[in-house]
Amino acid sequence: MAKNVSLLNNKIWLSSPHMSGHEEKYIKEAFNSNWIAPLGPNVNGFENDLESYLENKVHVAALTTGTAAIHLALVLLNIKENDEVICQTKTFAASVNPVTYLRAKPVFVDSEKDTWNMCPELLEHTIKDRMKAGVKPKAIIIINLYGMPYKVKEINTISKKYNIPIVEDSAEALGSSYFDQKCGTFGDLSILSFNGNKIITTSGGGALVSKNKETKAKIIYLATQAKEPGIEYSHVTTGYNYRMSNILAGIGRGQMKVLDRHVEFRRKNYNYYLKHLDTIDDISFLNEPEGFYSNRWLTCIVLKTNQMRDDILKLLGEDNIEARPSWKPMHLQPVFNQYPKYLNGVSDDLYKKALCLPSGSNLTKIELNRITKIIKQYFE
Ligand SMILES: *Cc1c(COP(=O)(O)O)cnc(C)c1O
Image 1 (cartoon, rainbow, N blue to C red):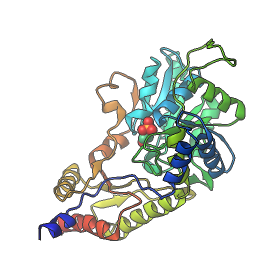
Image 2 (cartoon, protein in one colour; image 1 turned 45 degrees about the vertical axis):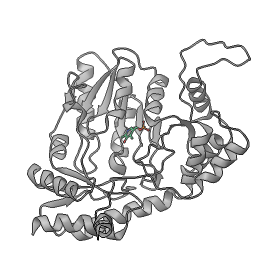
Image 3 (tube, rainbow, N blue to C red; image 1 turned 90 degrees about the horizontal axis):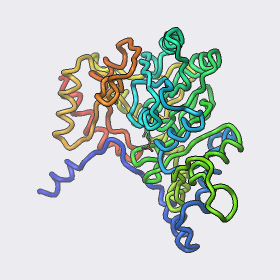
């Protein structure tokens, strides 16, 4: 009997790793050839797989983490102490931390309601206002939050108009697209993450995506301690130790085989939740605007009130189900609250009312049913 009870209450995770079964083959190859060091055939293979997935529009350098990729992107853009970098406030802290590694200053901009990503009108207002105060922002870090593409046309037009480069944080959006072009190709530089909870994982990993071979070469140079060619250890600039290891890249190669399937499963989760919960008046969903295709990394629902959100979070927790509030905006974080912010209320509202539901590509129908049943019962 006890066995049945524990089966019913199996932990349901928000977003857990989902292996394809092909990963070990590549790891074994690395062991058999003793290629355990960083660099090596799996790193090149993984980068090639990513480049062809991104339709050979870009060049990909595999790194240790998505955070490292953002850090190097800002180094490449020559961000220095006291420079201002415009950041989406509705995101995970990893998008912003690298700005402060460089002693630069984040300037936070709020979201719009259609995608939950940076509001174009507020972005332009922010740029004008900073310029009026005598500082022109040096870069814009934009997010494809929970897999939903940002408003590419509007934002990139503003970026061009003011000549401020974009770093596209696509950590959550590998497999998403905007009018049939893949996310991860829209920034002057773009980043990907392969952390354990992402759409595919290398256990830990990331990539920096650039537009040409020369930039990719420069990224690899900086990510391997900026060592000059030759056998002497000569250095003329500060380097980093950010290159992905050949073992982890092997996991990535195995994961690339199932990336599209993972997207399909996550979109199915979203559709399941939509079908079973959309009839409840107090729950709303984030629909895809025309031309937007989200990998639905996480399904988030918006409750009518903060109280409802907290109640449901608690009920799910009591049944051993991991749900989470949506990202707490950066302008509300003690570590960042001294920086300038341009707000419209959208991120504050979502912070109070949005709830991320379990969304892993390995969820079963039985698990999805267990989750939606609890939410439906709450409203009965
Ligand atoms: C996960 C994540 C990152 C950081 O990636 P890591 O590989 O964990 O360093 C950056 N930005 C966003 C929006 C993320 O969700």
